[in-house]
Length: 340
Image 1 (tube, rainbow, N blue to C red):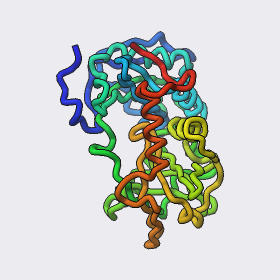
Image 2: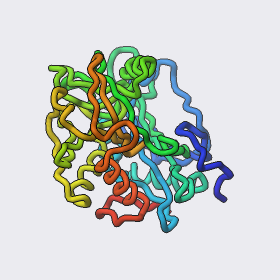
Image 3: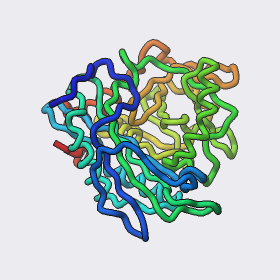
């Protein structure tokens, strides 16, 4: 039985569901893993995750398509990215095939929590891993736990996405050759002070520059960024310090192969962004969030798409990718992973 929830008015927050997946790493190998109803994590007070922030995570969604199937969007890429994150943090990789099987198990166990098609809501899936055994000296843990919980969430922007305002902060998001390219919890912890400060000043998010020269655009605290030129070319920053967004990669493919646009990944300099006509943030939660302006220490950079609605190309990209996810538009091979 589908849960008795007002799906149309769901916020974007945590809601406890019936089941979650847990596997433990000890003595050099992963346990078989299991579905459990226990939502409590019990670890030692000196656990590696608590002392040295040894943790990484992923985020993806399950949702119902037009034919009432329950699917996920490109979870194989989440599996691969989590392996890369684990390797960078000296954590054991959770194998790709087991990751996909765990996703399948936990969504299947919580099918009643998957919102109905057309509600605008989805089932958010959070895989994560952390060091569990006591660690005193600065070193990797020896034991780990891999978990997945799910939570139904509403659309990131209720009533449609209105263009947002970004600021160029004085803070850096990631160091050159640091951990900016992996989904480590510590990256997000570092961004919290900057985002709280931005909100206090009336901005929606921070648009970070490269730490080495502070001349090139990188990404925000929680999303990649794309731009559209006056010639309708879709451009996204190229940097070894930003997270390789699955949504961004998918949007660039859609731009070229569905919309017939040129899509380019290259270095983007702060002093050129006034030449773009559109800007948007991209990620799992909102897919695309249009940006109306960027404030650089008092200097206002406005995009011609304005502050009232998404730009024409941004809207086409959003409609096409969400259409693929929802089964209204044929998907490239391997993009849609069917659960039920």
